[in-house]
Amino acid sequence: ATPTALMVGTGRGAQLGILIKGPEVLESTRRVDTVVLDKTGTVTTGRMSLRAVHAAEGTDEEELLRLAGALEHASEHPVARAVAAGAEERVDALPRAEHFENVPGRGVRGRVEGREVAVGRLSEVFGELPPELARAKEEAERAGHTAVVAGWDGAARGVLAVADTVKETSAEAVRDLRALGLTPVLLTGDNRAVAEAVARTVGIDEDRVIAEVLPEDKADVVRRLQREGRSVAMVGDGVNDAAALAVADLGLSLGTGTDAAIEAGDLTLVRGDLRVAADAIRLSRRTLATIK
Ligand code: ADP
Ligand code: MG
Image (spheres, rainbow, N blue to C red):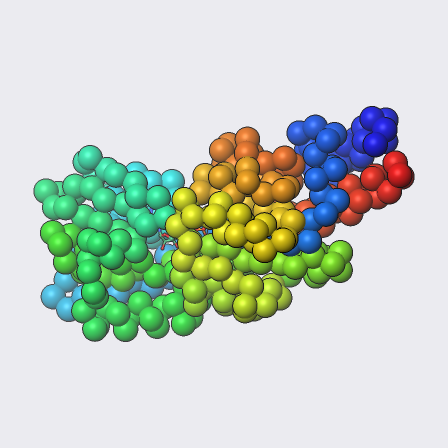
């Protein structure tokens, strides 16, 4: 590989909105045959909104929103921002949360108005859901929403459904990646029903959906695919994607994502448009072909 040709590749990359860490990065795209796409914030906009609130019988909806909203206000997770914003619209004022704790890929815990509140998919806090809430959760997930449970003092008190939208460009991006001979895989910490709904929308096969993966396990999924003989490109935006981006043969971070992801990636797609992932792979193949 002549350095000049690689430099031409990186220059062209900048024009396309791709930041390349170093010219040698292009070499690692040569064998890539699988593209793992994070869901939230990568295939979807990550801008979620609160779509439905179901308070358990005997629980006041205003109180549910006030306590859950106060706690989520302290978190930067897309789900948390949606819950906090939705609560702010519906209640007068959100109280302050004390000793707030973030449990990555699971949710948040803390003290609000003297109560031990938790929001998320913290099954260790809530245990099995009462049938009424289990039904509400199932219904929300069937509709393609992400349902989180909120509760306090050891009991689940309600289900909050948030939803995100698939980026307009994601379906075309998946088609472009397939046209390059790559297998798209969807990887997410979110639940299976939501992940499958998103996969259907963008054209990823159902058996290529890997859902309900905890942040610390995302890198293991990439390693497993590599052990199966695949050469893996990973595209992600979140703190929870950083380890997977680092382990992948090629890590593509979104410029719209978190600093941790950008630092872990080899390439950055500046505008967060997934179609540019295909451009990046096409560009590097072309650059390497000129060199040979
Ligand atoms: P992804 O892999 O799609 O980016 P995450 O791993 O960040 O998703 O989150 C996985 C799931 O954990 C969310 O869909 C949500 O159910 C739950 N979760 C994580 N953080 C929070 C939070 N702050 N509040 C509520 N739920 C949360
Ligand atoms: Mg994400």
